[in-house]
Image (cartoon, rainbow, N blue to C red):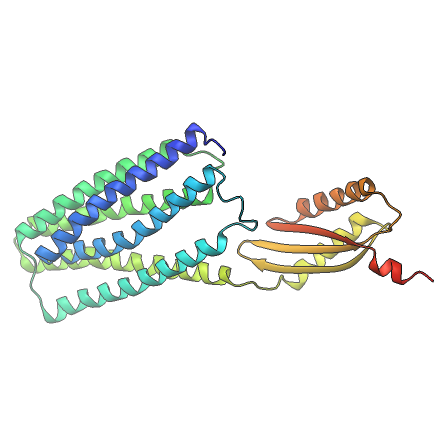
Length: 305
């Protein structure tokens, strides 16, 4: 089994510590939201619970990747990842819309602000959450490198947004707790919840829109297909002919299978040398490509008298 580097272990520990802290904070947020009726805390608890699932899943994947435990998946686990992102994205979108509806209803039908004590408790809980997000963000920042994986970069971006969101919520909750005007307190509480709801809607839509197409295979564009064919034929020269090219797009990558007709008189070493040049030429010109080259002598044999 591959032994992870010290930097990889540091990344895992930073994310794991953040997840553990988030679990405790989520428990506090749910308790405060249910006992005080603070809409901002309710919104944060819903958002936090859904994003915590993403963080734990990402940590598990990162842990496995650092130890090469996923090598038996020949084509990776992209489909699983995208399916999880899609589910969480839909959940965020629905939850954000529901919380937005609750906030609007409270303003229009039940203009009763939470008590100053409830808002003060909420502000205190959010302040603790802000400190946790800030420390977690700094811990991830200190372990960043230029070649970080997509999973870790996504975690860092998520933690950055959570920290900025906590700062804004701290402002609204503090104003709501300190003001003597119940209407202002209600507006501040609803504003904080509205910002969280809007973030949930945007994030949910973005996750769902990004993930859904990646679950389906789509054809490579004609222009890109022709470019692959042209580069291949140029690299082969007059020595070999292309039998067929099969392409499909899945996620960020184009999966290309090129079948080339070769003479059965050639040695394996000659074929290998020629095709390594073809592979290098294609990968140099075209990014994000998963290339497979196959050979056949079938057509050549059928042409013999």
